[in-house]
Length: 497
Image (cartoon, rainbow, N blue to C red; front, side):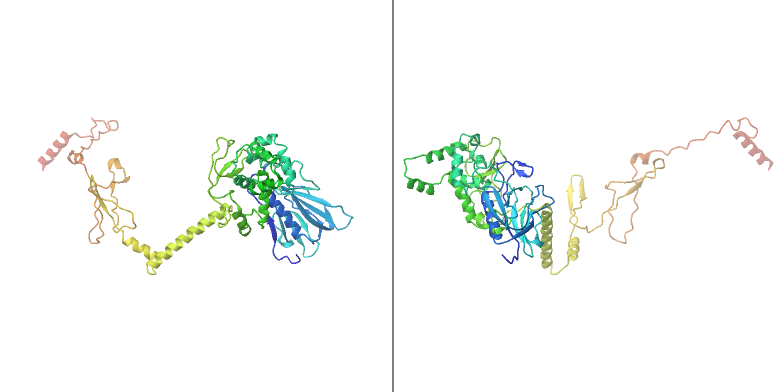
């Protein structure tokens, strides 16, 4: 352990819902997300990498964490770990008697993990840090990106939690069978298995695997299942050797609560860790029910998803449908990861760009090295204007395949002459509209205004006579000559001549 080239970590994650987080300490004993095998592996990780190392200085807490400060500082101390159910305890042992020993009890929440790295490679979400004494310094960090984890300085195991299903099997079995009259066992067996007061360490994927192996519907009454276990345990007619043989060949539910977590630990690696495909491969092969193709899913009364096969059981919540999984986890496929929206959009853009490039390259190969612009010009030349017959007569109908071969006829404009209006309005294309040809010798015809028959046969309007203003010049004035006077004056002038 003297030369640390790469960061080492153990991640214990599990999807699910954390219920009952109160302040900095998780007080609820129902359904926290991490299972006991992952916590057990976390303790083994600390004991392995911290063995023989000396730590010094103050235990640091990140500024963003809402947990309490750890008032521990020592120039020389060692770290060891132990686990119980869903809790891990770090024991801080000073090298001299001048400082008192201390401990820190950690609950991992949904995303807690331990990482052992160099000081320069400190993880981003390292909320609790222990520095080594030697240089260059290294750091044991408690990493929790979602900040659901908690710790308690000089704390103890939570009294609400029952004995551990792995390390305290006999006490665990006795605690369950002697309390079958409690209200907790009125619920379905799938919900009772998440009650940490009796099943300390059992989580979502463990309960699915245990019930699947025993062919027990998940919504069967818990007391009914456990009464059968108690009855088999009290059968005194069999000898001890036969009882042991039956237990090995046909283990009951409480035995599987002890054996199944041990199988996960024997797999090695990091247990349930979809982010690391190499460590997850063995775990994916081990799974028989949880997230396996063909299994059914249903949410219990706490909102947790249970995986099962066959009938759900008589206590299944009413109004909730049984669903089949869309995706399955197996050893051959890659682990399911949740991508961010930005990365999804980027992937879609890159895929569309790649498809377009492949299409253009394929067209370039078929065209014998022609460019995209040349191909487009070639397509425009081949386009035509088709005609179709309608009820009103034969008309040209343009079909937009590309650029038309002949120009479109210009719209005929007419000038309204009624009462001096100069507004121009386009006329609809009719029989009198002549399409313009492309021949340069043909003179352009001016648009003519069509006159109706009624306007052609109507008489010309007679001009209105303007009456003289009588107020300005009187009729009997000597200056004004009548028509008869003008004629007589003209005759007199002719006679004199």
